[in-house]
Amino acid sequence: MQKLKDKFQYSLMIISSLIVFSFFGYILLFIILNGYRHINLTFIFSTDAAHGILSMIVATLIIVIISVIVSVIIALATAIYLSEYAKDHFLKTVIIFSIDSLVSIPSIVYGLFGLAFFVGTLQLKFSILSGALTISIMLLPVLINTILEALKTVGNDLKASSYALGANKSQTIFKVIIPEVRDNIFTGIILSIAKVLSESAPFILTAGVVAKMPKSIFSSARTLTTHMYLLISEGSEKNAMQLAFASGTILIALIVLLNLSVNYIKTKMGGH
Amino acid sequence: METVFSVKDFNLFYGEHQVLKNINIDIYKNKVTAFIGPSGCGKSSFLRSFNKMNDFVGTAHSTGTIDFENCDIKKIDAQSLRLKVGMVFQKPNPFKMSIFENVAYGLRCKGINDRKILEEKVQDALQKAALWDEVKDKLDQPGTSLSGGQQQRLCIARTIVLSPEVILMDEPTSALDPIATKKIENLIEDLRKDFTIIIVTHSMQQAACVSDYTAFFLMGDLIEYEKSKTFFSMPKDKRSEDYISGRFG
Image 1 (cartoon, rainbow over the protein chains, first blue to last red):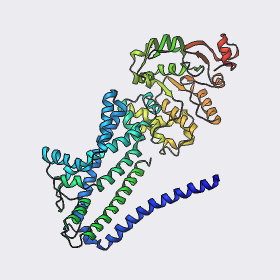
Image 2 (image 1 turned 135 degrees about the horizontal axis):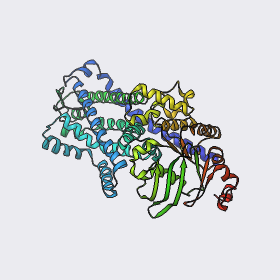
Image 3 (image 1 turned 90 degrees about the vertical axis):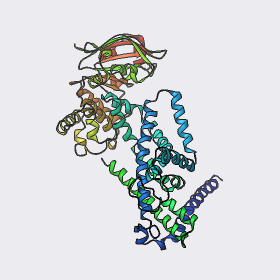
Image 4 (image 1 turned 45 degrees about the horizontal axis):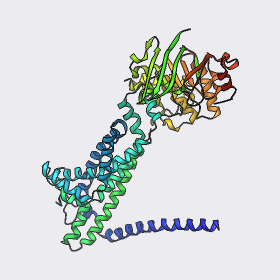
């Protein structure tokens, strides 16, 4: 009887895993099969929006880089403040509550905020910078929580050992504590990249939709996902659907490429 | 005999709770002093008072004095005190950096970055910690790649590279296997030439074998402080005798 039960549970787990995997595989195949025919060198490298998507790839990459750098710095500083410095329990509770609330705000609301604050008040106009800063705020809660959870696991004895060797607080934080959570920071970076690549609504409101190669971070530009959305909603191209699938295929390749490079940097840095 | 630490009427509190009661003790130079006693008797808290590690416990406060080389440690700034009074912890806990950098850490924190000086001092410390021969070909590998016993010797090397006067050891072998423990005990034998060592231990065998002096603590009181040979062969106090013979603790 017990054996039968074990077998049942085992097959249930296998079946569930297979279902999950087949969804993933199906979506992936569906996009690639529909898109690959349109992918050629002109499509990837032409800066002319009617034929190619290079300007969108560049805009997307710049936004990823700026937003990840900005949000990692702020998140790391916040998480370290909360775990190593903050003594006021009330203030700490309020900050943590705000961070948790930020997670559940829909991205379009961040977009509206970015439109009002970065585009409007700070006069950054519709630009790559406005888009990157808006998405940075969105990335913060997940990054802070990832780093904060990791900081909790750093043992008190390890910190004490550093102090016992005559180190001061900032030496202990930068040389001992941050290296301990380095892997978790990289996990956070990978999650953030995925989020930046997948959002479109906030970018329409802050980075704009100009389908031209951006001249600087102050130019308005279109990200890949925005491009896909506009292709389909505007319907101005005859084969809009196929072009969207082709862009999607490139986007997936971009995700894989970025994850691989982050992993590469991670192992390089951990190599001593 | 030269005194390194002289403790007078020392009381330690965590909040309302009194952990140590009216302790008077002299710690002698280049001797190994063992603190023994059942869990919760205050021996570890006492050890942490010598290098001001109790400062990190928000509720900790104390009365009385601890003099280090005739100077009240309250007047010495914590960072410079800790350079002279090193500490080895219960669990080996190398930092997430290479073996070399682990040992060089304290020196770098002091602002020494000259590669030549670092290499010289790191090698010297690793030799003194009896680890050099095992790691000399892999100094750039992570400290965590070593075995538990090697890691603890690395932590000892990390401490002695700063040439402290005193090394405090808080149950340094409790997380190690018997062979690694024996190696650390032999190491303590060698280190007493250069350093004053205070070791907290749960193992009476260890106290009897490595220490010159033994202090027995019970519920915050210092019950007996004696040469280890005398203490373990003919304890004066009935409670010491009970503890040694395993009747409680």
